[in-house]
Length: 180
Ligand code: IMP
Ligand code: MG
Image (cartoon, rainbow, N blue to C red; front, side, top):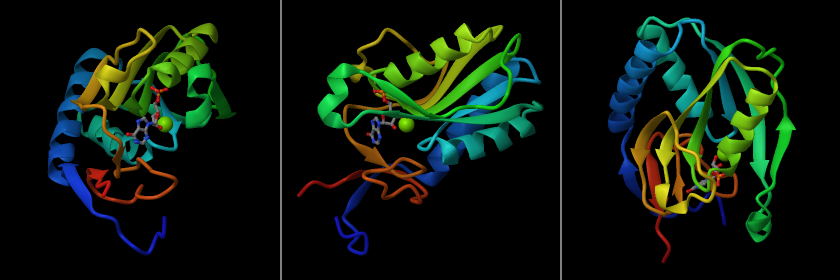
């Protein structure tokens, strides 16, 4: 795709709708989880969501620490293998910590299951999960997010950090690329 030629993108969640939902999510999290939470951001797709959510958590009175992990699932053609690749690890010690993993989309569930299993195996005291979008129809692994922004149908979304072939992460809204 030519990056200079903007395809038409239909807005699903506009910036204001996302901002309002993020604020509520942060308030829910602040009510239920300890102030010194260790937030683990799953790169790359959740970096915009995480940046907004972390500041909302601060407004809600929390003082979390933050680390980053880069996970990727192998390409579409090998998706049935379900393999998740740990491309870059966190540097924090999770032993005894209450952790919350943030991802952009809970789809088959493999990425989040991999991340929660890893942190549990390393001795985290508790592992919570937060996603912006929940594609419930697509689930293959039995896992639900403790905190989810919006349910979405099985459509390919972009924007607000989420990419299609490395494009569209900088869009301030979440939308669907028009296929025509
Ligand atoms: P899962 O392991 O199948 O749950 O995959 C979750 C990951 O797949 C997300 O973190 C995204 O990186 C990617 N993904 C799933 N659906 C979409 C989409 O609609 N647009 C872009 N990336 C997606
Ligand atoms: Mg991802």
